[in-house]
Every structure is written in C-alpha cells, then in structure tokens.
Length: 72
Image 1 (cartoon, rainbow, N blue to C red):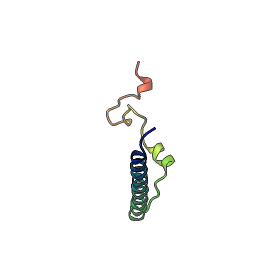
Image 2 (cartoon, one colour; image 1 turned 90 degrees about the horizontal axis):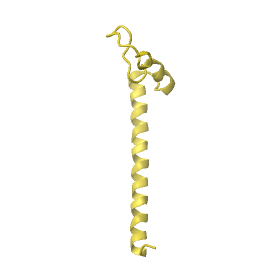
Image 3 (cartoon, one colour; image 1 turned 180 degrees about the horizontal axis):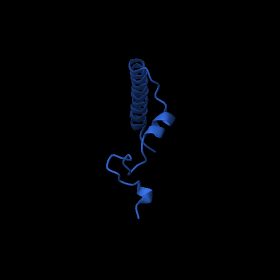
Image 4 (cartoon, helix red, strand yellow; image 1 turned 180 degrees about the vertical axis):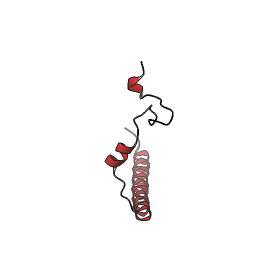
C-alpha cells in the first residue's frame, strides 16, 4: 500500500484534473453554442454523417475514385 503522503498527493491531483476537465468541457460547450449562433445552424451528428463520404473514399465526380468497398 502506498504511503499516506502519496495517497494525499494523488487525491489532490485527481481532484485538480477533474476540475480542469470539467472546465474544458464547459468552454467547449460554450464555443459550440457560439458557433451555432454565428452560423445559424445546429450541429447534429446525424446530419453531418449524411453529408460526409465514408472513410477511404472520394466524392463522386471529383476524381471518380470508387469507394473502398468497390475496389477489386
């Protein structure tokens, strides 16, 4: 078992890291709200996934590279 001094140090570090993570999450949420206000759109993961092409593919007509599933 670690010494009590180490446990106390680790506990305070864990608490500090948790507070920093919570603060970063709040800043990220505020930034996302501000971006949504400026652009007038809402960031939905479902709508963004529909407009993106699958991984390892290019959009049709651009250079006509077939999707990875169609490559022999």
